[in-house]
Amino acid sequence: MPSNVRSTARTAWVAVRATAVFTLVLGLGYTGLITGVGALALPAQANGSLIEVDGEPVGSSLIGQSFTDADGAALPEYFQSRPSAAGDGYDGGASSGSNLGPENEDLIAAIGDRQAAISELDGVPADGIPADAVTASGSGLDPHISPEYARLQVPRVAAARGMSEDEVGRLVDEHTVGRDLGVIGSPVVNVLELNLALDGLEG
Image (cartoon, rainbow, N blue to C red):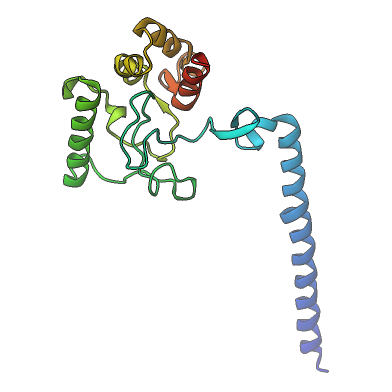
């Protein structure tokens, strides 16, 4: 066998062995190590920050979901989430914003439709509806709404559940999370956690 062929074969064999070793060490070993450390140090986050009721998962504190009936109509007894552009709505496998610019006709029409729907549902003028109520987040999975949008929904939720507005309003205040480190971002309300608290209050 010519020396140049032997040299090429040797080099190829070294490359194959190196690929196999690095695949095992970095692809499997390192991934397994980090996964194990995450599961031990931050078990809730590592497992998807699941929220359970009576031992059954009902959602994640990190991913929004809809509170609508089979026809897509908003359930009046629940706080409504912000719109989602991820797949058919809050699809974790299709995380995305609408990617439409502020002057896009489709986006403008969608915002108008959402304003009209909220105005009818909550009995408020369109110009009093917060922006997060009619626009999707960049991920399409945002589980939070603004405190302003939550308070706008208090009268409707209270009436649907036969509760006082003060009682429902206190729950909103209790589930409002302030800015990170006191300065980053804006106060938010986790919709799933708030709705579960409402269900729990009613027993």
